[in-house]
Image (cartoon, rainbow, N blue to C red; front, side, top):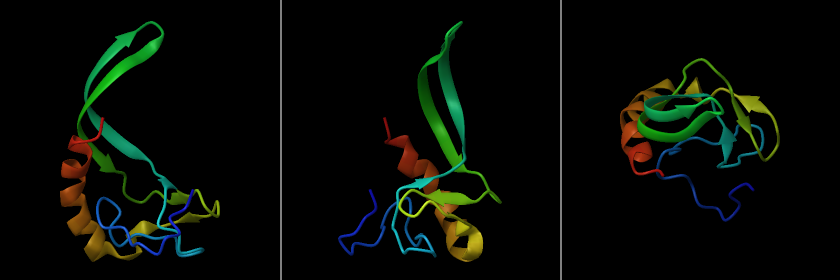
Length: 93
């Protein structure tokens, strides 16, 4: 599941890697999603995301090694990345 081809993240996760195993992801992350939803008694059936942001001060979980880490250790890079996150997720299905 981890990126092992030596390629560094160059999009939504640029500069982020697990400090325990150096995995480039994927990671389990808490996010806040803003958009429109089709909701029935069974729950959310459809979600049209207009904005997605990573929640601050919540650890990420590496799916490669299973350990939690704080990607905010590099705060300057994360601040720049926050501005790019909305663009990244606008094109996601």
